[in-house]
Length: 466
Ligand code: ZN
Image 1 (cartoon, rainbow, N blue to C red):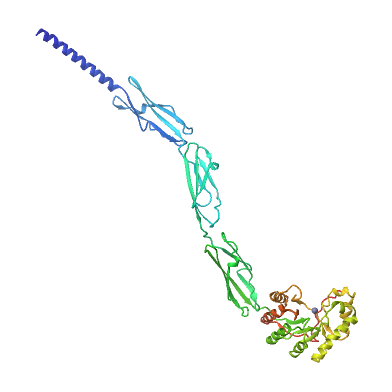
Image 2 (cartoon, helix red, strand yellow):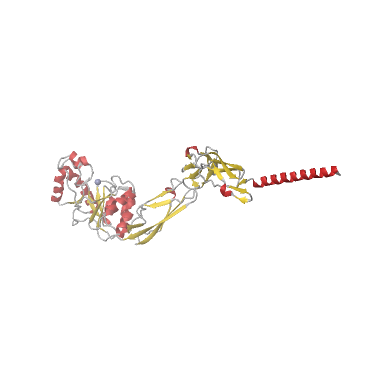
């Protein structure tokens, strides 16, 4: 019993000690401060971005003491690097710390910007011409030089990497297709006025296109212009390029009558001649126009007879038309003139008194044969009862006008509605024969009248040069 009693006391004592130790431990444990990070232990942020501090949560004796946490260290967001932040709590018996790592890194890829559209149409069978680009990086700055381009079938790929290895890649779509319409431009304006009569002369046009060349020849011109009737007409120009893009434009053509007036003396030199003079006589007859023929020794007699019989004036141009001969002396001139004069008289019975000097009274070629002879002859022919005529409208059919269109244009341009038009032509020229009907039609439509030269027609004379 005694032993029992003794041991009981021992057990109680040990138990008491245990209780005290455990309680003390509990007290110490409960009074230790506690601290814990908000958010991740390791944070990675982009350079130049904002670092948002999340802080830490701390408890002491069951109370929130987060406000007492002190943060040591700092983060420079503008500088690449690894930063350590320490969160310190100083409470009660101990000091407690936790820490966080913040890495400031370049995690942003460069930005490529394209000049021009992101989708480009390029003419088929041609190479795309770069429109330009730029690459800017948040850390490395201008990286345009480092951009690599890769040409694919339907796109251009642009790639660039910054020092950190962040890559950027964009593409420009390339469509090899012509979608642009050609352009037609009108010379002479969209409103065009022309005079009644003659042929409609196209004032001209031009075509441009982004892809196709030489489209001008492909323009289809449609017009309903009636030059023989005053009015407003439309000329349509249409074209399509190789890809089928089309353009169409219209021109308004006003055909108006020219102020009326003016007499035209059609004169034909150097004939007659088989093949041209007879056709000219046919046209004059059909058109009811009387003209004047300055004949020579050329051609068959019957054409001179026809000229006279059909109401034209048969006039004299010299027999030989040989400058060296007719301008060598006054006598030689009149002797030659007499030959053609007598020919006409024999054929027609007429005493022809209207003449034209070979080369005109203003010619200078006669200087080669006799100085001053034109001054003498121009007076002497008048003294001997002749009247001579030069011209004031030159068809230039003996010069450069080798085509009927040129003869036509020269005459039409030379006509004046306010005066006498003495038109120089040659009935030995096929181009004159071919232009004659159009000239007559134009003149008629514009109020001109025709007349043959008579002895009372005022002389049209040039200045004398020799
Ligand atoms: Zn002549």
